[in-house]
Image 1 (cartoon, helix red, strand yellow):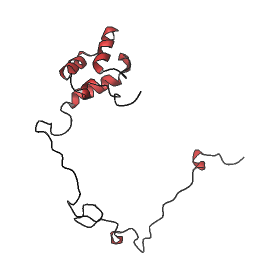
Image 2 (tube, helix red, strand yellow):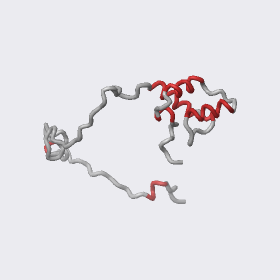
Image 3 (cartoon, helix red, strand yellow):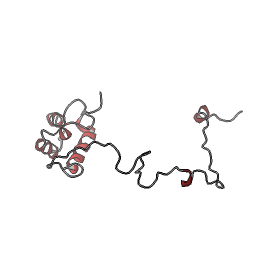
Image 4 (cartoon, helix red, strand yellow):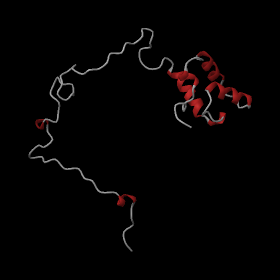
Length: 132
């Protein structure tokens, strides 16, 4: 009886070429590293990229979400299947449906949703952006 076949037997074997230690192939002398001051831009100097400047409103929060603990709580509410499916409806509709069915959803979720009623990051479920 022959050797047991593996799933990897159907793939072509690809091996990387080894570096020669005597010639130091792949060392910085080969020019593989960018010159100092070029900022990794081929043929450019530091600050020479054509990036578009975007202004940030003064009232914008400085870094991350303003309420990460609340968003984490709502994420856990989305991941909890005991309150029924959450795709296709808002979090508040899901909370109200669970309350109607007697599933006792957390009141803190409803309070958070009512505080941030106009914010889609709070109202829409975790999978809102994915097609059904």
